[in-house]
Image 1 (cartoon, rainbow, N blue to C red):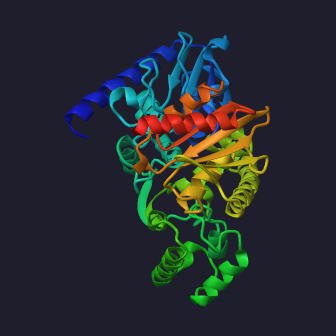
Image 2 (image 1 turned 60 degrees about the horizontal axis):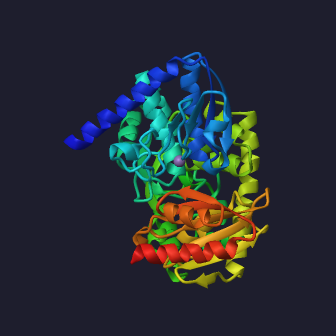
Image 3 (image 1 turned 90 degrees about the vertical axis):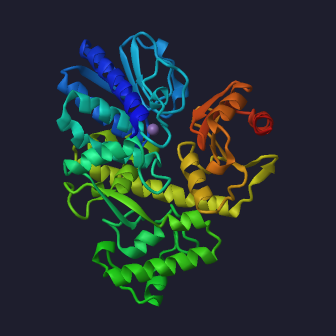
Length: 444
Ligand SMILES: [Mn+2]
């Protein structure tokens, strides 16, 4: 951190400290948080802080900030990971892009909330101000950051790194270079390959038979990753890279097979909660299957009933991802100007469309030289739109989506490269036309 960053950081901490004083005056609050890995981890850190302050609380998770208006609540609200407009009777901790100075948001202090710190990082800092011992929650801050893909440059950076360093110092966190696959702690390699949706491995994801024959063709016995010799690990990676290059998987995705991974030494070896990516996937699975409170219990320490339940949700979630990806592979996208989109109707759940679209783009199932959009029906007769672009495109996707959605009576938000919107049913075509026009005018 250089001098000006340091100054900004101190201002940021001062604001967090003020909000802590403010919160101490309350007897009971309602926590509103985003139903995803980062939002769940953030809520867990917040709940711990509230317990320490002897404040009564209830927790509610929302799929998106568009669902509520804080003016409609009579209780004092503490919101996390939701892009909401604060009222006098609320406090909002968020890291989505904003110009609103009332939100406690890294963007208001010159820090980039889409890659430097997540909501769970923000709450991690908040609870660290309460007591330095709370650096143990930087494990959850890391889970949230990984859940929000803040390691997309290959490694956690910025304020995330500040949190990481503190966590490593106190022994709760570790950073190592390794294979980045999901499931290294818990699955045998054939299953690791078969269930790999990020990256999607052509010919192997979803096809256990070909995973077994791949392993026997390179002379490796099927067992868990940490049981392989270093020589075997290298051979497997080399063959896998070769296979992915030959299947036109984008180079960046293939490079991503190896990278920095974050582990928690206090969780037992072989547990999915030992690895930040597996932990965040478990939390995401509870969110996408509509049981984020199960994820919250796991963050708060439940290692039995709720964890077993979450494992079942995860199986369901992975099946839905693989079904969704197979659906996309069979169907050609529709092209319109700057856009490339598909309308999955009820074939893909609205809670899954963003995840599946993201994986399809990162694994080369969909090309990334257009703005990629996925549309799906919601339970309440609306349309969920998810959008992804490659960072090279230099478009503020969240604001483009919000403008296009507002014109048809909907709303949107998110980040520069990943955003979403909700629009009324029947407005799909108008929305597409509007969005294309907006993107044209922005790039001129
Ligand atoms: Mn977040």
